[in-house]
Image (cartoon, rainbow, N blue to C red; front, top):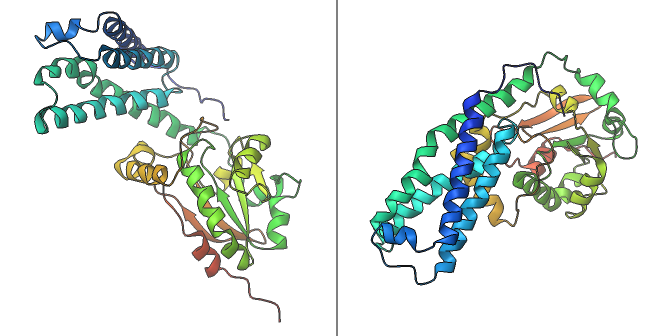
Length: 322
């Protein structure tokens, strides 16, 4: 991974806000666990029939608090914790509106827990994510010279030591740049490649996978999709990504409304979410390269875009030798 560029110190309010959120969550969670009926008494509501369920809510809230305290140490690096927290603080009120105002199953008095637990944190958490996105986007312009395309394909090699230049001389290659291996969209890409591999190779084009992890981790992940025999190139410093002009995504490209729907689609197809293994902001892409030249390309405009790999290969089909 690239070192951080020289920058102004992280604004103090980020850390202070996360510490405050963490302490609040831990206090609120402990209160609910130890005294599950007290909040209901304050709101003049009957005590819960199954207090253990309410105590589990307190436990979850408290665990979030620990996460916020961890994120407070380095908010710009631990932005996924902030994102997950914000999602919970958005989905919670949505559930409240449905259960209270639409079905009437939840007493309206619970608004007094929604306001301090969720609503007041929307603005600061959103601002934190915007700052994190701007920071990581700024890593695209670190002042380091980007390796030119020819140098990049000659200096990067697969797990067998064959350079990308040699691979593209042997036959056209479909260079698939992946997001980090724990990303649900990376898993969906591997799923799609497994399904379309036969058609791609029938076109005389060989898929090559580019990733940001070490080779051992990539081999284990690709084996789950029976793709571990394909050439794979480890690019933890993202030199090859930059040489092909693949940048880090904006907040809109990574967690915008379109990406939410794409994420739901990917999960319904059986793709989960794993450990962050690489740059979570790095955007993927697909390139068909032959004899060191780009023949066709697809650059994602959203993290969850799904290229038609087989169609790309058909368009560049290598004619059979008579």
